[in-house]
Length: 311
Ligand code: G3H
Ligand code: 13P
Ligand code: ZN
Image 1 (tube, rainbow, N blue to C red):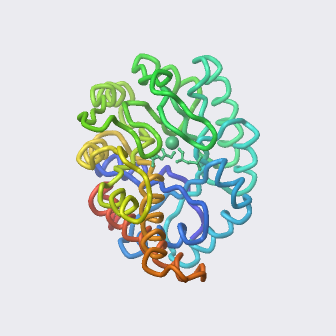
Image 2: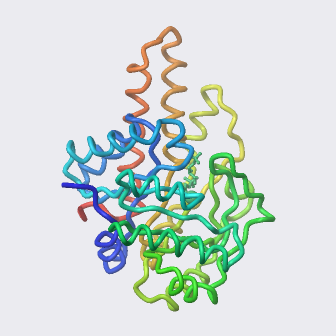
């Protein structure tokens, strides 16, 4: 099976009240861990690559690894650019075989975001590639960009119709209180998301797929494990799984997860070295890291996304 776009996946997810997991990939072990879990649970997948991941691995390596994963699993997999920052980055991914790109113009004034997104949509649609846009601004860290809490902003529902009709995007990322990274809410406070904004957006755009970024749950067990083996991640806090299930049952069709994979992998590697201090064989410490990714993804498919059995 070749790479697929998200069109069919999102249609079925919207109607079925579940979401597709969009997992960030940076190397072979991460790709194998994710795709092995999806294969066992027969789940459709979005594998997404950030600009930082492309710089780290070199574009051709990740594309070829994802092609290998398709050959290995036979699953419907979409290869997606996460947080595309310019027309040129999006074009390079489209030309390189990606089936979906995100153009993130969320930091731009509305009209400039519309113009940039429209330009990417025209290039992408002519080549059978789908596009995700973003309105509203998430706090947190992604690559070298750090958005402070006070510079973040919720999506304004009154802007979504104009944005979608003027740009022609296929899905829309909105800001309802999630953020990137492992420190999403203040310790001791109750995490809250603006479900009223999601509700309003879905009323204004019936049947239209919505995307949730910054959706890791930062599961305490993994933070504790990292701290136990010499890490320092006090105060890390994520989005409660119950809230993600609620979002998936509404118009959210794509849920982005990166930090939880990083935490699972880091906890496994730290544990391995604590227990095997003289080991220096990368296969020995990357094997438990890959297994930890697989278990984390299986957990997400079954307990958060609900897309198991939907491939
Ligand atoms: O939203 C950002 C993702 O977690 C990717 O992070 O830019 O460090 O690769 P990155
Ligand atoms: P997390 O940092 O919550 O995993 O979010 C990832 C993300 O939104 C990638 O685009
Ligand atoms: Zn994101």
